[in-house]
Length: 278
Image 1 (cartoon, helix red, strand yellow):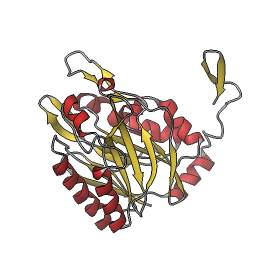
Image 2 (image 1 turned 90 degrees about the vertical axis):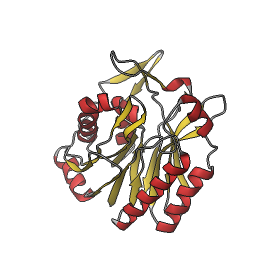
Image 3 (image 1 turned 90 degrees about the horizontal axis):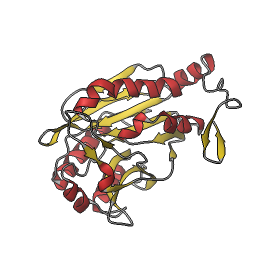
Image 4 (image 1 turned 180 degrees about the vertical axis):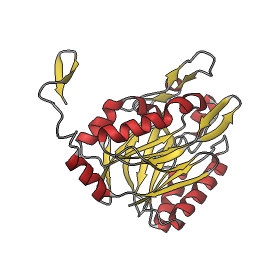
């Protein structure tokens, strides 16, 4: 399977962002990709009020345009994430997987919302305008199980372990990782999630400023189950492309069977009142 991780610098102009995304899908198809992964908030990056205004129902005009392109190109597309209208005053940070016919094959609403305040850095409070999801979503692309996630989810390894236990061979990570945290942790976390779950990780990021003082790290990349970076797009708008070798993945899982060697009979995560076996 050939994969393209698409990197964008989304702004407050939805029409311009859509045009960029459609052009990147054309590039991915020209590169022979089976799947193109777009970044988080590809539809709009800007103010909180603007984000709420940008939110659409699912499906809506923005997703329909991406679906039409997927259908024309015969390409699987992960619409990294968009602002989806929610049942209340807040929207949802929704990732949509579109199949080769442009149909919505899966939807994942971001579980972990980005509410942080690092000293000396801009603060973020995603939960002010976004409601969190409530389920883990594992889907299939041409028969290959994939785990869906978004950006800040990357810091919660239990989500990716649940995907691996559900059979995922690929982990999808559309993101808008900040410049400050990305320099320190982006590649480290991506490679860790790949190695500990023996999965391919496809990470498509935003790059550059959307608002003054708020910049994203870029460095969209594709990582193999050994932790090797197969392809990376450090800067600018564009794509990173790599071929995924599932035979090599199967050999690694057989020769270094860490998933099979887990001791779920011994350790468990305890929730109040009951335990869940891992």
